[in-house]
Length: 162
Image (tube, rainbow, N blue to C red; front, side, top):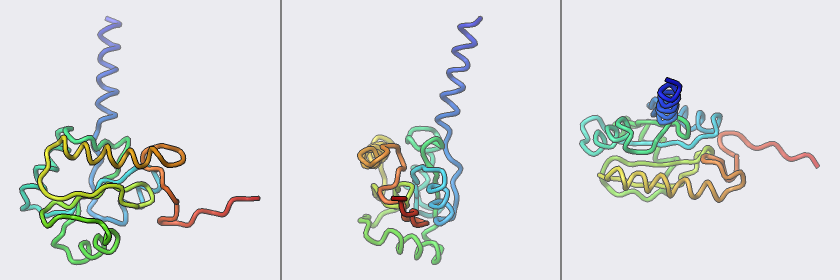
């Protein structure tokens, strides 16, 4: 009985850890939450009628793409909303995307794009993109996913006392 209870608790703990974050539809709020929570951001720009966008969302929901609430905040952004599209473009103007939806950015907790991609991908491809982004944060001081390289977004870091 104790073994069964221990196994059940282990499964429940793993399920809680693997829970997907609730997506926002606001880029600024998502990046602010990433900063406050010291997490990475998974940002998907698309539209409701996009098959690639819906397939990517389904893979996240099914747990096939490693976007968990323990490590990420998430946003589903509408490319057809001119304000949202302008804000996304302004923030990630240097990112290189293809011309096929969805446009995806994995950002650190400072809002800096670590990895970008677009178009239809398999779960393995999306997970590789996430792993590549995580490897960039692991090399930073602190080494934790989402650790900003320079914590200047959205607030300046206070000067160190001498």
